[in-house]
Image (tube, helix red, strand yellow):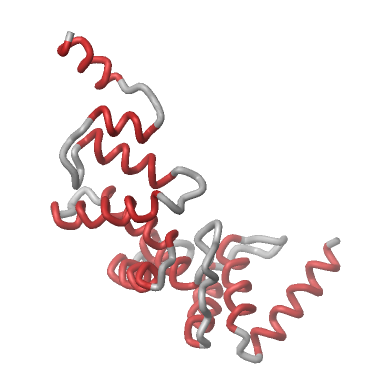
Length: 184
C-alpha cells in the first residue's frame, strides 16, 4: 500500500508541476494536515495552496470540510502553525473572499472567529452571528448551530435568549432551569 501512496504523490506532483490547480490544492491539503503518510509541512503547504489559487482553483459547490485553498490558508493564518506566522488580517481577508465565493466552511470558520474574539466590537459579533446563521442550514455536523446556541446563551451579537441558546445546542442548560423556577 505504501508503494501506491508514493505513486499517487508522484502523479500529483507531476500534475501540479504543470499547473494543475486541483493537484496543487490536493498536495497543499495533504502537506498541511500530514495525510497519507506524508510529513506535515505547513510552509510547503502554503506554497502549493497559493499556487492553486493563482492557477484558478475553483471550489466545488458541495464540500464536507474546509478544503478550498483560500479556506485552508485563511484558517492557517488565523492560528499560525509550524513555520507559518499568525496573520489574522490576512486570514480574515482570505476567508472573506472564500465566503463571497459561497464556501460555507469559510463562512463558518470566519463566523466562529468573530464570535470567539474577546476584543470584537458589537458590529463584528453581529457579522459573526450572521455568518453562522447563513452556514447553519448547510452544516452537516451541527457546529454552526452549537456556536449560535452559545451566542444566544451569552448575548454575543444577538439579544440574549437562554431558551433559544439551549434549543440550538440541543440540551438542557442550567440557565433554563433557573428560568422555570422564576416563572413558576
